[in-house]
Every structure is written in C-alpha cells, then in structure tokens.
Amino acid sequence: MGEEKIVILGGGSPFVPSLIYAMLENREVLEGSEVCLMDIDPTRLPLLTKLGYEMSKRAKVKMKFTSTTDPKEALEGATFVMPSYRIGGEKHMRFDFEIPTKYGICGDETAGPGGTFMAQCTIPATLEYCRLIEDLCPEAWVISYVNPTNFVADAVRRETKTKFIALCDCFAGFAMSFLPRLLDMPPLERRYCVNEDIRPRAIGVNHCTWLVDLLVNGEDGYPLLKEKIKEKSKSILRDHEIEFALRLLEAYGYLNVCPSHCRMLWEHDDVLEERKALLKEKRRVSILGWTESAWKFVEEMAAGAEYDPERPEYCFRLHHSRHVIGIMVSIIANEGREWGGINFPNKGAITNLPQDAIVEGPCIVDKRGITPIVVGDMPKCFLGLTLHILNWQELTVDAALSGDKNLLYQALLACPYVHDMKAAKFIMDELLKAHADYMPQFK
Image (cartoon, rainbow, N blue to C red; front, side, top):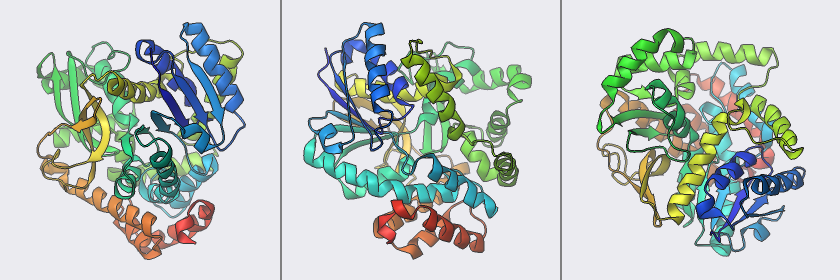
C-alpha cells in the first residue's frame, strides 16, 4: 500500500485522467496514496477531483484526491511532484505558432523561435515552483513533462538542487507502440519502454533523438526492422512524417524518433506551407485541437462513461502518462529498470558531447533516481546538428536567466530553424510584446 503524496502542478489539465488511469494500473504500489491537483485556474478542479474518485471507485482502488489553487498547500509533504502546465495557456501557444510563421520561419511551441520564447515564459515559473519545493518538500522527486523540457531541465540544474527528472513523451509513444507495431510485435507492457523482447536505445537532444541501438530477442534488431519496413512500405509511406523518417534512415542508417519535429529542419519550406494552410483555414494546430475533444471526453467520463485508452483523444496521451507513472513506480519499488526519453546532464553518457549539456537518452531508474547509461559516441552523421541545437539551448537558457535581450537575439540567431536575421528581429520584438506578462526577467 502506498503512502505517497503525488502533486500535479497544472492539475486542471485534460492530461489528468490519463495520469490517474496509469496510477490505477499500478495499484500494487500506489493504492492508498493521495493525489493533489494544483492549478492557478480553479475552473475545472472540482470536475477532475470528482472524476479521480469515480475512476478509482470503478477500479476498486483506494486513493485520495484533493485540489487547491495554493502551491504551498499542495507541496507541503509531497513525495512526488509532476509539473504539467503551459504558461499562458492555448492563447500564448498560438502566438508561438503564428508569429514565426508570418515571417517565414517554421517551428512550434518547443522548436524554433516558439521554443525559445516558451522557455523564456516557462523557466521563471518553474524555478519559482522549484524553490518552493526546496523549502516545503526538499526530498520530493520532481518528474516533469513541462516543455521545452531540455531548456527547463538546464535552468533547474543551474539554479536549484531539486531532484528533477525531465521527460519527453516522443520516445514513450515510439517505444511502447510505434516500434513494436512496425516489428509485428505486441505493444510493450503497460508501463515499460523496454523489456526482454525489445530494447530500443535512442540518444540525442530533446525532439532530435536517434535510435542508435535496437535489440530484439537479444540480437541486433535493425536488420529485422529494415525488413519489416520494406514489407509495409506502401501502407506506412502514406504518412508524411513516417515517410520522412524512413528517408533519414536510408541516408544515415538510423531511425529518427521525432520526425514531426525534425522534418522542420530538413523540409522547412514544405512544413511552413502546410502550417500556413492550417492557419489560413483557422484550424487548430497540434495540441490546440486535441484539448477541445479531450475536454468533451472528460465531461462524458464525469457523467459515467468509462475511460477508454484506445479512444483517439487519449491513446497517445496514455503512453505519456504510463511513462511518467512508470518511472515514479520504478523509484518507489527500487526496480532498477531501464527507461528512455529522459533528459539529464550528460556527464560522459554520450562521450563526444559536452559534459554539462542536457542530453536525452536511457537511464536505470531505482530508489536513487536516474543513472544514465553510457552509450559511447554519437554517430558523426548527426553530431554537428546536435551541437548546433545544444548551442541554441545554452544561449536560450542564458537569456531566460539573465533577462538580457541581446542574448535572446543571439539565441534566435543560433536556432537551426532560423535563416534570416531581419525575420529573427521582427519575431523577437513581436513575441516579447505578446508574452510580456509571463517574462518578468525582461521588464
């Protein structure tokens, strides 16, 4: 029986039901725990708190659900904290899409100029929470899905002593579902990215990682993977992103884990035109469209509908939730299990990248937290791009911590998505105005 106090910062989010579902799957470790939903917007907290009780009742798992708008009240006595918020909400996310696109620069809320500015908004708020954690629950593990995850992790590493684990759900969906499906194998067990049948290892930087090692039944899995890809080529090539990932595989010999983000690096103009068409049609972009349908599903569940993990609104989000909850359970149960998609200070794990860089790769997770697995050198074919992204990341965090607008401009110019100095300046000026309320460092 668990006696954990699990705090979700951003607990008024439509992500919450999938997190609760993943917790209930792990009743043997988490039953008896308290889940506290904290959000500065109280609007949906009663609905989600009630839903938590309903879901646990249906699953016959005893758990306590509370909610508050006071972070101090939430964090008092916490053993695990899960930051999962978007500073400024959907309105400000849209700025990160629309303004760069207007000036011919691609990207989104985690990549390109939007990623730079999302970091400027998110880092001050996250550091404020981390300082409260240091004061109120210093031994708590912070398992974060806040984006841009690598930028935030770098700032937290520099400025606090918080026990901070930063995750990316790209690898979770890739390893738990997409890769097994490609190999004609069953999806991985409910909360594991690795098992004895299939062990994928991807390294790089967030949203630009590569499958550098794949074991299937203890043997090199890449020949089997390439064989299966040939068999399925007609069906899988209908998807732009998968087709692009396969062209990268042909060029580099490695499968890219996040083609939706990396495609903007190699096919910038094509993606830009697609983005313009979406915005012209006033269609919601990416997660903006997902949240609307997800809230409808939440309301249906509150009215008595069962949680359906296969429903499109939640199928991918459940990988995200099983990832974070699985890592939490591995810490509590001292499992010593391998997990991927974790962002951490390199310290020699990828031997030809800077020691203090925040990289993404596999770790062993147990009661001590995360221990990065040493994977050796990153292949030279994408080493240069990785170093370029790391330089952009470092300058972006420098700007967020200093409030220096010249450093911010340098960060935009260092961004691999940006190819025009004038456009960078226009974008910077507009996004500084658009996000002004959430960037106190520049006032």
